[in-house]
Length: 117
Image (cartoon, rainbow, N blue to C red; front, side):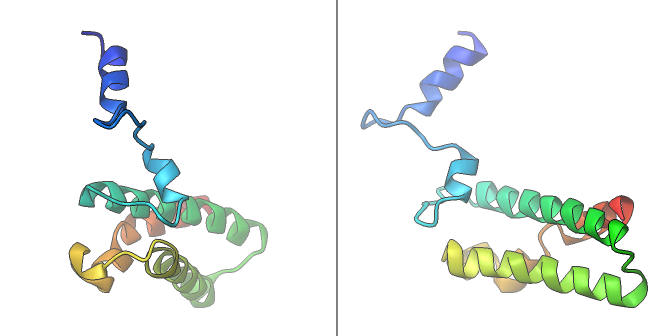
């Protein structure tokens, strides 16, 4: 069986529906996350996207030093916190608590932010 045929087969559910992609679920507030790692991947990649955007903005508008880093940390953590607590309304305890979700991929995003800025 080819990989594309396997992918098509995997995308169909038992009831005849089509499985939603990860990014479709990420942008849908009523999404159900069957796999813990799938949601953690979304948090990780949203954080990387935020880091690139803020890094470019900080590079254009010369925000430097402690103030620039502090504002980045607040925005990065705040946006993701609002995303998983208000938009997705997930049970944080299933993922190890609020702190675990808030720090998921944070250092990598900080490095990316530093590189882009």
